[in-house]
Image (cartoon, rainbow over all chains, first blue to last red; front, side, top):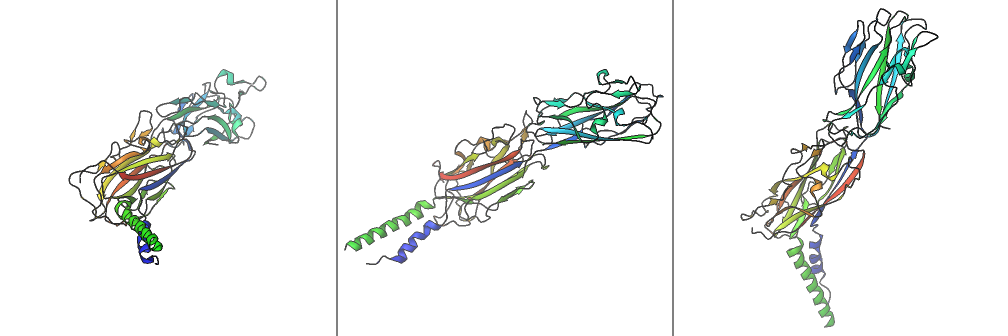
Length: 226
Length: 223
């Protein structure tokens, strides 16, 4: 007696209906390294004669300040003209803050203001606030406040004031050079969290018998996550 | 005579299999509930069938969820179809997403909620004596109920971190009027599984996980 093939075909079909008691949702997400630099607040200008802050820093906005240091000749009797520019850094990975600077003077002699005449240093690093990796460490490659006695003095031979400490003047930053590096800055918090790492960048010039003229100093900060 | 006996037995087995298929095989079923969607993503995507008679196989790529993504939240809605001729429950279990670094993406960073239980169509069973219950704490849209915790990290009323083993997220009475052997477009219910992920300063890396939705006999509630 032959197998009733028509029946067997009909019976097998229901098992091919594709019904199931399980389903799957597979997920993936990517977190790339992220770093940013913004203004940490207003610029502080001291010891100036004339001049002023032309474009001030606005906290948590892109850094872009412009400062007129005023008179830098002997008619300015202050010991230093200093500008302190707060920087705010944020990252989800170890970071490196680099800086490059150019100094252009209109004078024609060695007595014009040059990169070595512009003192520079990063001040105290502050990691505070909710969402900040407060336990992270940082390495300051500069010598800090350039006006400190330990960071400069009058050259006994030439009589010119010199910023002598490690990475204490802009001559050390003629090309992109590390100024600060450290551990990741932010814990897992949204970008709307406004906290971060704040560090003041200090610039200083000692008024001297520089060759008369005008000088333009341009500084670029770059933060990366290598 | 011997051949007839064998043939009869085989036919009987096949008939029993067919009976089993029609009575039990489609008694509980889970499928796609429609086209999944994604919003707020940077380089992300979601793929899955819009056909409610297709299996539930969805792939979600949240994309970039570091602060490079400036959207406030990435939201994924996955419609899921369910059918049954008896009381049911839906469970979810998770595999993956076990980052040791607490600053990396964790299960608790992915909001997970259930909303919008609805009839697929006229062949869905409307019961008057029992309701379809979204189990606590999953009855929310995590994309609109996210908050900032004391640590500054985003928190949700329920998340993938709320799942422990096969966790019941939904249960209720019979879902389907008929007892069809095949999925139909209107013979059950659908609900939305909502996933939400806020871009944050997570530690860098790629994370992945799989959710398994299962429908099984549930508490014996009247229809």
